Structures are given as structure tokens and as C-alpha cells.
Image (cartoon, rainbow, N blue to C red; front, top):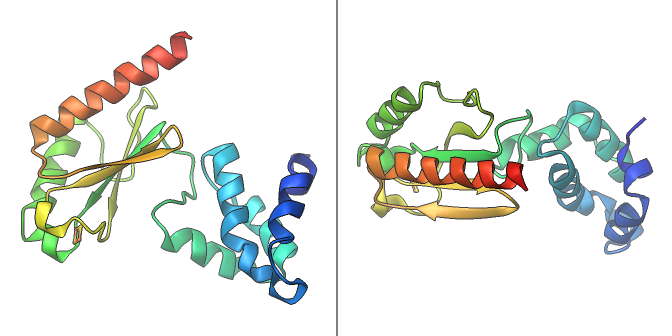
Length: 171
Ligand code: FES
């Protein structure tokens, strides 16, 4: 069975070694990060394992995963395109931007395009409020920020991501 301890015993021990024995709970985020880097998302089983390793409840681990937009609970597309619709961005048209973008690529918020390349998500403040509509793209181990977007410019970015994904598939 694939488990974090089976697959990454050395990495887990290295992470735990950074913290005093009675502060193992501090390792929760690095362990979540380890799992996400491996799988692209954090399963319930992984949350259970992490909870056991650091000695906290599964609910506590799940609340950390749920809180941060960098962590995903479900397998999504190769790239997560995360649009901020918090109030300041909403005042600059983020909701309409998101709705039109979804309409253009034919999926709803939270869904993944049939080619498996793009998942669209709605998130809260990404610290680019005065440059909305804005979004971040997570994928390939990196995050890029895109501010002052229009639906057309976002579609160009999506087209570029699809080209990149196709090129990587062809390698
Ligand atoms: S409210 Fe959207 S980036 Fe701050």
C-alpha cells in the first residue's frame, strides 16, 4: 500500500527532525506539501496518515488543507487557475470576469476541462486587489500571477498553458 511513511520515510524523518519532539504538529504543513508534490492533491488517507504522524486530529489536518488555496483535496487539472472574487476584486468586476471565462472554456467553477489541463477555482484575496480581475495559476511546481486581466487575455494564457501541456506530453 502506498503510504507517506512507505514512500517517503527519509523525507518524513528529515521534516520531523526540524522540530522538537513535543512540537511535531509544526510539521503538518511540510508534510502536506510533500504529499501534494507527489500526488497533486491531498487525499483523506494522506490526511489521516499526517494526523497520525504529527499527533493531531484528521479534522485539524483537513482544516489546514481546506484553508490554503495552495492545497487541493481533489485531483484537478494540470493547472489550477484561481480567480480572486473577494469583495475588492468583485468591485472591479471579478465575478463577471469569472463567469464569462467559465462560459468561454465550457466549464463551471470547480470543474476541470475535458482535456485535463485547466481547473478553474474561486479563491479569496491574493493581494492583488487593485489590479483585478486577477488570478494565479498553480502548476508544474510554480505559481504565476496575472493581473488586470480581460477574458481575452485570460484565454490567451489558457491557450499557452494547453500548448505547454501538449509539449510536455509529447516529450
Ligand atoms: S481581494 Fe482580490 S486580490 Fe485582494
